[in-house]
Length: 431
Image (cartoon, rainbow, N blue to C red; front, top):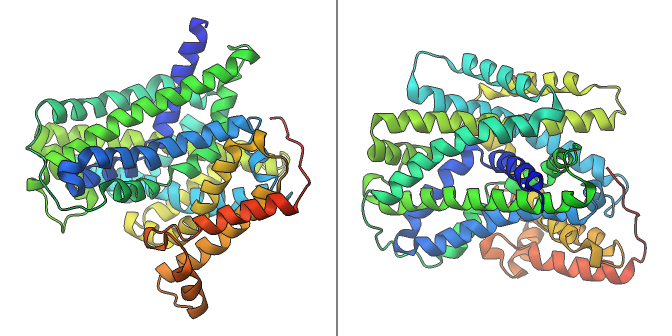
């Protein structure tokens, strides 16, 4: 194996790590640690399965499907690719993810260092930086992998190293019954799987920029995945352990963000607050750059170049800026419905993309995706307080309903029936 393959794989792996590691990911592990207590290892495994492995598997699934997200979406229907991305870009990226990143930058980053800068100023500066870094889509991965991610990792490793070497206390018995399952569900709610599906091609293209031979690209992809998995595992486990050993310093009334701030300040003093603020800002910027790049590239492709990449990048930044000043809580509130509906569909598509070379036809994609959407839609309506008796009856009949996975068994049945009924197979496309 050439040194160049390893070097390129590491750089792109750092970029993948930073795209997954948004500020939301920063606050979940300590909360899991507090809830898990002495069962923090089981909690770590649950978080690893859904918050690390599943998103990275999404990237591998796209690779196994010919390196294009279209090869995972087109088997559902010829129109599904555009519809899926329209929901992801307009419904989640532009109106939820991007403004939430800007708002988090202010609330957990800038505000921790000074209260003299108003939120609108932070939001405007955030999107100016995102625009500058994302303006040249061909160089985004290098910027993330060579510069921003190392700074982010060093800051994170300071906190994690001190948390392990000089823990705040000892893990306590919390009485948690199913630490693995509860951590699994929390990691599931990070939403990183959607980023894996959306951004995979961005990283593939970075590996195919001329530095690697075509037969080396596949090796580079697996090195990229390994780097992201190792990095996320070290950081998540360290932050989770911080929570497990610091339970005595927090209360159940605190938000997850407040819990993290309190624990880091207790661990490192005032300098810890500054380091945490820097981490939040870097994490939000790196994720924002990746999401903005994908949004711009999709719109340019969908309009066949009528709307240029840079033009849509400006639109993304303007809309994100307008919504960003609403604050994190309001943004999460209005975006949660779409996320809850679309995420099970993403899980089904990831699994099918992973085994796509083994499937004889497109039936599993059609049946599995349809059932995942129908049941996740019903389950989401009920969970948000919309009571429809027939929906309640159907969901109550489903296995795993108590864990939020009422859609899982119907989706599997849909895959099987679809594979039996439908015999056609759409040819793969090349990027």
